[in-house]
Image (cartoon, rainbow, N blue to C red):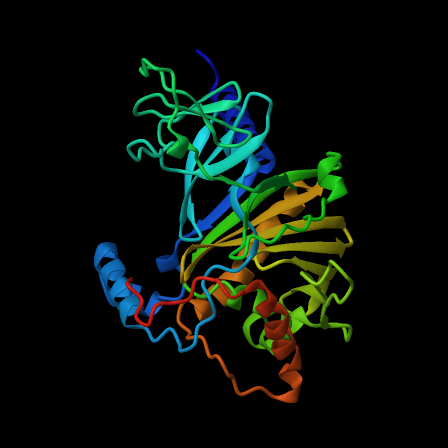
Length: 396
């Protein structure tokens, strides 16, 4: 008979091994933190209803009744807007993406290049992003197998055509696109102006910094209000606590150099305190806003320098999809978990405000708020004469 202590020892070793395995797996697996619109800012409603479905219905009713503001800027600004993460579009894969009031098919050919077209086949309207097949350098419609060339959207083959001819109106619209820093962008411009270049983060490009995870949010507000937070210095103390501002070098400024007016920068110092007393870490944050919907946050800490990449894109006029992706030097897996958690909690505090506020076109600003006015003047460059405007009454 096996002694009881041996059984206990064996079980203990097994349990400890299992715990270590789970911890290491958790440590090495990129973390994904996702929140929907109804998750944040509506605790008072969730507490009033026993059923989650009833709470969601009440929240949606509240959203319909919400006064979103007057004289809202156009909902879809000009610039590079992210439509997908690179990892989500594999070779030979096509996906459907609905943003910016458009329906796109995003696909990657066998050469590894990404292309973006209008989603609907000009033949009978099938969505190429749902069942479309990527073959060589073409995408094939799932409905009748019409093939469209990736380089220009021309229809190259209709398999059942006896004449072999292709209608002139069969061409798909091809959108300008680029793939930078692990994200896929579409160039959206109401005047069809030429695009600028998105800065490459060389540490990501070289593999020096690794992807450790992301957070993803759906936020109910205008796209302009999210980056405006960077210029709203006073909100940092009110919403994020006094330890957010520990230095005097807190500045937001727009770039005035030729061909770089789409850039803006911000610098601040952020400290992490244990029990709000003992400083554990201090971070110097350099923020680079690139156009209306892309931000690079370079953070220098005692653990090293890393970057958080923020993309913002309108899913509909007053619903924004916000993603933060975290890239850090190798060997910082545990630190990355705390970083993702901390940044996510901070963003949710802002999200609570955004989900319940209205947009004010002419706010009552103090001299201490001058950066907000400067930001709005800078951001206005992303609207133009043909930018789609809000209807007099929004249909939710």
